[in-house]
Length: 461
Ligand code: NDP
Image (cartoon, rainbow, N blue to C red; front, side):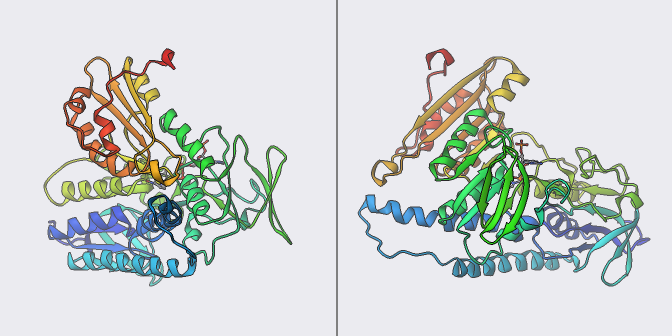
């Protein structure tokens, strides 16, 4: 390590998944590391994202499990749900996880600074609460993102909406909820609240939710929303929101009005770079405010890096963690490597849920030309007795020339769990024949992934 011309070898801005991993790994090499976090340790994932969201998905699912258990002989009379009780337990768990992040950092020797840090120049940061300035040889921007909202000029009445941040503080389940958006967050919360008994309407500006996913997956999820009782309104946006005696009234671009109690806007996220002083350090941002980085997470300034959501590359926790780890290994551990953003598995916790890795059919055709498609759609065994009519859909996207598996897509119960494992094979470059030669595990839904034998022919449908 260089002689201490600076207060720290590394200063990390942001205590989310990427920043914490980078800070901890760097500190374990003996580097002098500080990490500034203005809110709570853990970032979006732990505090107001993946973790509490998944707890809410579980809470919502229990109601359905109870109802469906009758088909298996159970009789559960008088079941009821207490949102306050659930929230208290959920927040206790979040507190526990946040404390673990804090403890792991301290144990690794990282100095935690519980205030906001902003650039003064490329090596200097001002700490907002204390007014102190600190210097660092290397600086990592890991400030994450936050929900994006239109301005009051763009959407009059926008002050009446909530975002995914506030969902985790709601004291009661609203009777009527309108969700705006058709991405991960909108779809997941529409299902969560429908499962918890709210009357949910989802308003999406496109025709089929989950743009960017495989078209068959999108259709399955779109239908799944309707089957879950969500009213889906498409090709519409909000014109204005008004608050009255009976609640909130949304006027849509179609001219129709919707009355509701709560509006959740999930129309994308934006990078937390506002007020960070990137311009004082000379760090270049793109037109969306994301920090521009190369494959090694280097910004245009030689001593400054950025990882995670703030870069706008792939807004997923495990991606941020790996980017942070790669940065720390490369810069402090003498083990250079970079995050490979290909074949990253992802899930949407809709009902049924989506698990996907690799390319959609359309993207595979665009990149690779001739493609073989295998599809199956079946009623999972569990649903034979419980009255649940939902089906499981699976799709394999295979490069025709060498049979390499380019994409695996599952919509069905436990899809996320299946895809994590299938992703190992896909990432290793498995072919369709490797899947075929793998013996099925019976009885399971996942066995269908290795038993699809007939190529899908569009004209046969
Ligand atoms: P997404 O980018 O996934 O979706 C945004 C949605 O809002 C899209 O449907 C988009 O429509 C719509 N939209 C955007 N702008 C407007 C507008 N001006 N008016 C109306 N609609 C608009 O964002 P999310 O906020 O849902 O999620 C952000 C990211 O967080 C995800 O991309 C993902 O990386 C991460 N995430 C991951 C989860 C997981 O792993 N399970 C869960 C939650 C979040 P259109 O389709 O037309 O562009």
